[in-house]
Image (tube, rainbow, N blue to C red; front, side):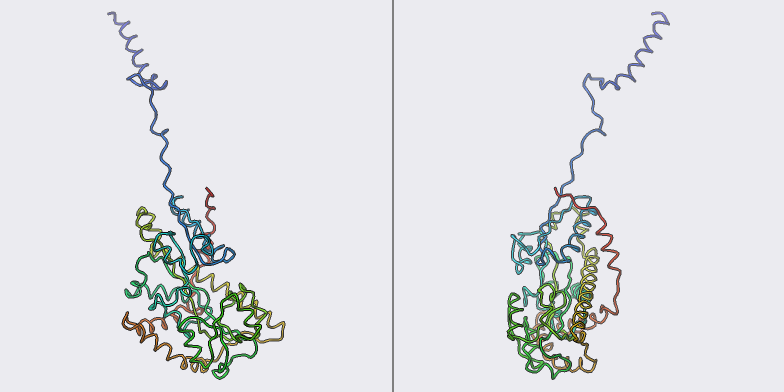
Length: 389
């Protein structure tokens, strides 16, 4: 073969080597598909039914839970979708949220201790009268977390679920229809609407009589004189539209409720490790700060609103008893705390738990503990909305 012809053939082969792939041909005659053009599998989305006993208008739902939803969607890369169910509608009852989570009816929920009073008896130290300070949302939230983290005996009370955190509504004040309460003697003979074992014991210890009425009868009961005093906070007062019925308010606590935030254990274990981390105890402290901080802010705003309404009627603002009078009130309540210790000593170090709670209430009080919860809420709320489908 002549040298020129050999060079021409070689050139054609080299050109073919570089040009044939451009036309989608392989050396074996089939078509090729670039790996970059292959479609990846969409990520698995884990949907969570999230039951809350709060109504659909409550800021705990409209603001905080919605922020939780955005945060989880953002941080999971679109793999965690929270489906918020206010008032436990069509899924379970507000009193059964904890068990609905435990048994897997729902994946996640928030249960009020007042709906299942007496079940978590060691943690119910939080409901003892006379200890927590007003407004008490953040204080009780952080005290609950500290007690749960410290005592295995308290942790054992919540066996069967993954505990995410705790939070709280504002603690109660005493609202009166007729006469103000300024001293221990002013409580004698009062008819106080009360609920819960230790609250009722406290009412009796203060020389008053407990009255049991369901929320649907609170307004009618006040108007008809079934009771003359009620333990509430301002948020409940306005939510129940009772603000026009009471003339005097005293800053003393005889009743408190906290919330338990839990996830189904099997569902939690089914999540990939990186998604499990989103539901860690440490991660949900931020959530606790939001619930506590916003709860306090909302309560204080309504307190101001109520005091302005009282002033227009020529009535005094919320009365805060002097330290010596609070000491007298607490002395009357000492037997209630002693009874709680006696009832729970076989279950754990009850006296140590009570002492810790008293100290934690001071540590996390409204005056002493001021975390920047608002910036956390602002960040979570700024994330994009979760797609509807």
